Image 1 (tube, rainbow, N blue to C red):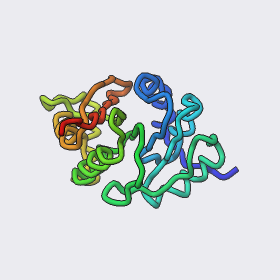
Image 2: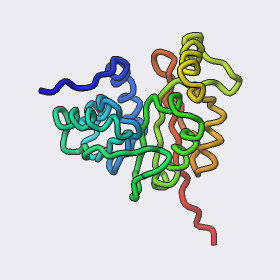
Image 3: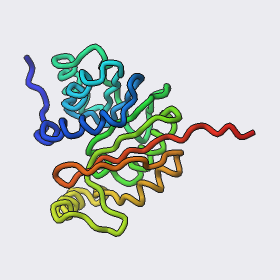
Length: 203
């Protein structure tokens, strides 16, 4: 079998994330994963949710390894990976849920804004967007380990950085999303759960 791309962090966090997703993902429908990277999450999650169809995505340079993992370890409910750059090329159909892990802090702010805008467009009313990663509190507080991580990100690329929770809530509100859940996770990470507003029936 071909050697597959591997992330130690994905291996460590997949079980705690899955337990939280059990509380928020719909019982059936379609899930878009933004930034599938190595594919370790989607191949681990999919068997737990047999009535969900998963659409993994990533930027072009990550697709070969992602495709290889899904061919080797995937199940029938995982669709072939497709390219997705949040700045353009979003799917032309709707999803019941969106999941993304460790993406907001490695994107520049325009990409984070584009991600929320895109999710707001493709997520069905009542659908959820589950976003995993480290986040800065509204008062600016972060754990010491996250402060060091944030500094290392900004040294690598000034556009990167751990995102402020208040900013994300504002971006969500501008795209018909509301924060409905927040779960603290190991290693000072969190899962933020946003819900797409129901369509207005006002005339």
